[in-house]
Structure formats: structure tokens, C-alpha cells
Amino acid sequence: MPGWKIEEGSAGVRLDVFLAEVVDLTRSRTEKLIRDGRAEVDGKRVTKPGTTLKAGQWVELQIPEVKSVELMPQDLPIRVIYQDSDLAVVYKPSGMVVHPAAGNPDGTMVNALMMKLDGLSGIGGEMRPGIVHRIDKDTSGLLFVAKNDKSHLFLSEQIKEHTVQRAYLSILIGRLKEPEGDVHGPIGRHPVDRKKMAIVPNGKEAHTHYRVLEELRGATLIEARLTTGRTHQIRVHMASLGHPVLGDPVYGPKKSPYPVEGGQLLHAFRLGFIHPTTGETMLFEAPPEDRFEYWRKKLKQ
Image (cartoon, rainbow, N blue to C red; front, side):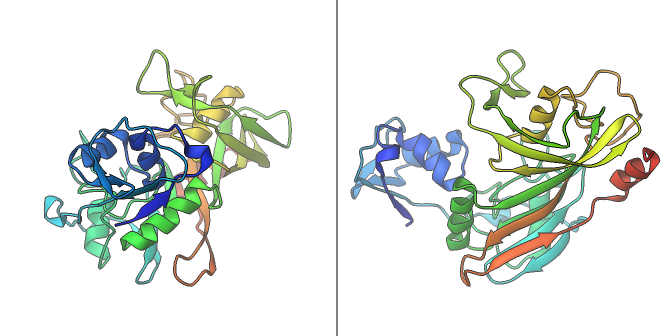
């Protein structure tokens, strides 16, 4: 059963909030695990999600084994770039949801992973086995997945500490004034439209660094590097500059200057991290899909 010592910086935080952060689970799933008696504080079972933590306490969480029978393995078009006994790096095509949820019971990356890999961690629960981090449905690119719980916790910690290298390619609407820059803006749920994210005062810290790679016709090709990894971060931050991602149906203009189909032109092309067993620095890169390249070439000067 994995455990964590509560440091001064986490003193006063709710138990469910702390566990959701360190294990990268949803609050609702964390609350359920606590109410089911799977959490302990200093060796005593705690069933109240709102329990306030104190510095020096030792918190443990029992994570149930994944029930793979709940999901059907499916032969879907994902590419396994690398794998060993601890983890795999995969290329997700645009248009594919990472894990099952309401409205997407199958056809997800998880269904494909169950077909292609010989094991997945159970920390994410029955519907998210192996999933340590995610990218949007219409974003393509690289993700790592954990094949056991030890690797899942190790990789999750790197994400929490912002040491994972994540870089994206994107085509934005319009021309940026500066060749590179930084966007700092806390991200949380939109105050009115709960299906959207927005820069809000009480949001989570978010930092995106961008640099211009190529000026296109009425558009710009950029590389964006994430220090943090909030939901829709690049899409929200670039839209806040007045240059939303081309093809973005949520944060872009109602009438796009170009008839891009299939969602936003955003691709996770670089992924770097420390291997949980060997300690080796792993770095992977993958080019964008044909759809992305079509528009880059079409919009060249």
C-alpha cells in the first residue's frame, strides 16, 4: 500500500484533495476510495474525505486491482513507440478519447492498450488503467502509460514536480507580435460555461512557454512547452493572447478563417522523463499527423 509523509506545505489540506493530487485521480474517485475505507492516516483507517492533514503524518491509500473484465480490448490505430516491463510510450491519433467516460464507453486508447500491452497499472481505477496523464480527444501525440503501480506513482510524481518534458506543435490563428514568450494564467472551470476552462483568479497555476517556428499565411506555427499540465492549457493560454489554435471549436472564433475539420491543430511531439527503474533519461519525439502537415503546407507563404 503506497504511502506519503505530509510535509509542511501540505499541512491543513483535505485528505481527498491531497490524495487526488499525489495519485492523479479525480476527486470523486478519491472520495469513494476514502469512504470505502481504503485510506489510513498514521495507521488508522479514515473514512471522511474532508479530514484535515497535519505535518508529519503518514498517509496510505489501498488501491484496488484493476478489473480488466469491465473493458473490452479493441484493435484500434494507436502506435506503441516503446515499451518495457514498467511502461510504454504510445502515439494517440486525433479523434480518439484517452479513457472511457460517459458518452465514450469504448473505442478509447485504454481499449487499444488492453489489446496491445501485457499489463496496466491499477491506480487509475477500472476505467483508467495505466493512465498517468491525458491529452484532449482531438489532440494527437505522445503519452506514457504505466504497466504497474510502482511505475504509475513514480511517473505521477514527476508530473506533480513539473519535471516531465512536454512540448507541442500548434498552428495558431493570426501572427504573434513576439517571436517567443511566456503565458502565466491560473486555469480553472469557466464561471459560466462549466464545459470550458478559463483563466480565473482561483484556478490552478499554469505556465506555457511558446516560440514561433514559422510564419504562415494568416497563421503561425509554434512550439509550446508546458511547465504545468492543466486541462486545455495551451488552448486557453493561446486564446487569451488573441491567437487561438486553428480548428479549435471551443476556444476559437465561431467562424474559422480556414475550414479545418477534425478539431484543433495541436500535436504532442516531444515527451521526456526519468525511467522509474533504471533512472535513465528517456526522450521521445514523433511528427504530427498528415492532417496537421496538410494545413502547415497549405498555409506556407
